[in-house]
Image (cartoon, rainbow, N blue to C red):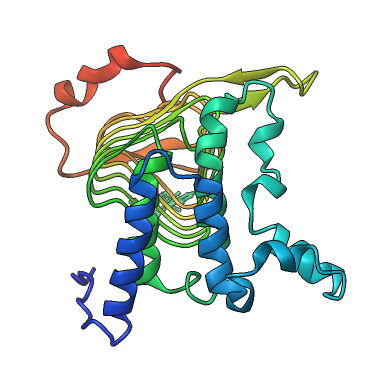
Length: 281
Ligand SMILES: CC(C)(COP(=O)(O)OP(=O)(O)OC[C@H]1O[C@@H](n2cnc3c(N)ncnc32)[C@H](O)[C@@H]1OP(=O)(O)O)[C@@H](O)C(=O)NCCC(=O)NCCS
């Protein structure tokens, strides 16, 4: 394998404008008394319908505008849309309504020309929002586009965590991501499951991904799984049971095929087994 660390790119002429915009947004959100729904609406309106940024209210009532345009304008305000977790019976409204405007801002930004594939702007923007949404967010958090959450407020994230594009972090029962965890494109981490008889019966259980774990492309981690330090879950795997530290688990259901060559002694590897939630594979 070739050693190919990421390159550093030079800032473009848009960088200073981006920094000024993020500073202004950060300042507004730093005020705990601010109406986050209004910040979300104003920010999105300036990006997608700048011609209505100063006349949003009158435009939404203007029956000369196409109905779809009025509806699209209304949808910039998070109070006019619903997100799936709001339908969950255990949704803590006081906590969710506080983070909902920021989730809506995050998801909507990702669907604009400014957000989308724009790596530098996207990473900086999401790094600004993440600590205001998650239960805890460490330093240097990096998320690419189209990452989704359930509640957001049940997610704990360590330092230097990277979440790649199109990842679902279902924190309904809680997710703990340790330091230096990497979650690759299209992976899913769940923390809730349903009865096979009655889907209204739901089990919420925390899923724990310890330091240095890599969850690779298109893998799925089921609720309650505990992936031990430096473990790895291979492409397309479905982790139904715990992953031992330094083990590489692949397949459906995911099973260990090897131990990383940098693993400490076998006794060290097995020393965390007391933390087991499910039987290990
Ligand atoms: C986890 C992974 C790195 C394992 O690679 P590896 O240690 O080189 O494993 P090998 O290629 O030697 O394969 C060992 C065996 O497991 C099988 N295997 C490997 N990856 C598999 C996978 N994702 N699913 C099912 N089986 C897999 C191989 O077919 C082989 O089986 P065999 O012994 O019957 O021939 C690889 O599966 C993977 O998922 N790569 C994803 C890309 C990646 O590197 N991501 C990193 C973070 S972005």
